[in-house]
Amino acid sequence: PSVSVTPGGYTVKGADGSIVTGGGAAQAAHMPSFAPAYPGAEIKASSTTTNGADQVGSVTFSTNAEPEVVVAFYKQKAAAAGFSTNAEANVGVGLMYAATDTAGRRNLQIIVTKEGGGSTAVLSWTAPKS
Image (cartoon, rainbow, N blue to C red; front, side, top):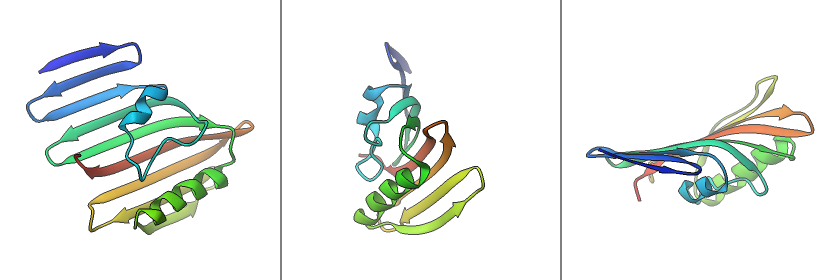
């Protein structure tokens, strides 16, 4: 195994895959096109794990946008990528949306809560390793 440390995080690589963690704009490069960084958002933390045939990622971010606007953005991205909605809910303290592209083995889920004058969100995805 090897470990690389950067100003924004670190990467661990092994025979079975790798893990990339960190925060900030540099982490947007690890996000798939169907689940991109929200425009103007501040990425607080992220991780991407590659193991076998799949890549799994998660990003926590804050934005000035309302939760409904953030969820609508990811619903549009999912629909444009051929995803089907699995779940959509108002969970009291925030909104949740999940979608799947079964043929492409891709999933996304976002949970967005109201935070001050904007939102905090956790976006997670799974996709085949590219």
